[in-house]
Amino acid sequence: MKTLVILSSILGDRSNSKQLADHLIARVKNANPAAAVKVRDIGAQPIPYFDGNTAGALFTPADARSVEQQRIVELSDTLVAEVMEADRIVFAVPVYNFNLPAQFKSYLDYLARAGVTFRYTPEGVPEGLVKGKQVFVLTARGGKAEGTPSDTMTPYLRQMLSFLGMNDVTFIAAEGMAMGEVAALEGVTLAKQRIDALLLDAAEADLAA
View 1 (tube, one colour):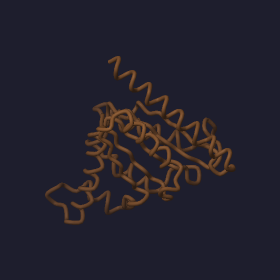
View 2: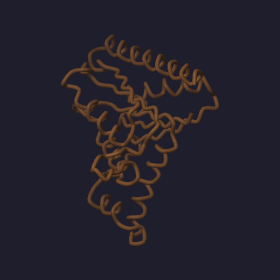
View 3: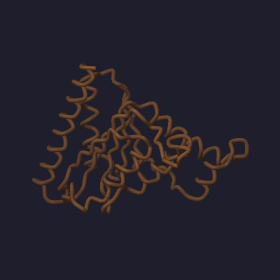
């Protein structure tokens, strides 16, 4: 199983969402040292802002693109290929001001391409083309909002990923990161326990298949 990990925190090694992703990677590697794991850190190397030039490049026919437009499309093609080639996708996403980081929104915008990662049926119904993926969304937030109206990020990501065809999505949140050392430790510990349980369940399912 090929695992793709997308990190999006601006905090580097101090990031709680990265800590969860590192824990998952370690567990995957412990179970299978030869496991293929690719990591892209868009917090350290942000995806360029999705602007009018970007949209123009993606909608320009290949034989009419400028050198700059071709560079933009090549980046999008690379991001799409990484997702398509992966069996398991891990999105490590911190909560900034009640929602996802700007760099992760740009990543999704580069990923969402009509006719490539989604299409519309003759009836006008959207169909996601990124299918058959096991997806984990690892989040970290300063307070506690899971399952409440204050959690505005989870519904958006669930809808967006489903739009692209990713319906096997599990959200794991480390909450209380800004509520003191005890609360933060508890939040991270519980999230890691959930990761361990999910990986164990997935391994057992693979063996039974």
